[in-house]
Length: 141
Image 1 (cartoon, rainbow, N blue to C red):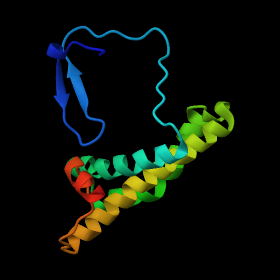
Image 2: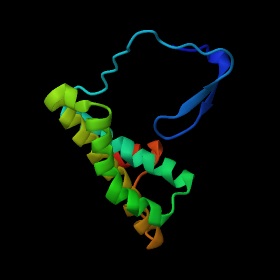
Image 3: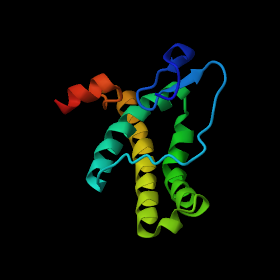
Image 4: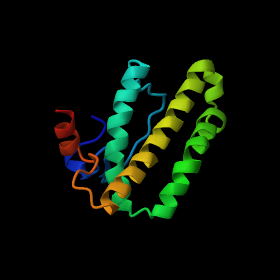
């Protein structure tokens, strides 16, 4: 635990919810390694769930159709360039390249799912793609 449980306020989101901390905040002096994926297959499995759940976050933000279609087109290459060049992923060689590409695919997947969800909703479909933890669990069963 990195903060006192009585000193923070949780901010709900379907995936990667945040928190606000009251009082003084510190900072790590050293790097902290965070290994989130065991394999590329594991990455894709988590990416599929996370991008579905992030659709609900985007809907709450009220992103317009025009804006998310532009993001569907421009965000994946932008993500790749940011991760591989600006964040110096190239220094990690092939691993950095693959991670930048996978991040771009994840971004594409998110905005494609948002597009799909809105198409289904606008068509009056009774079966919308799952975008909450509860719906995703039901869908997987």
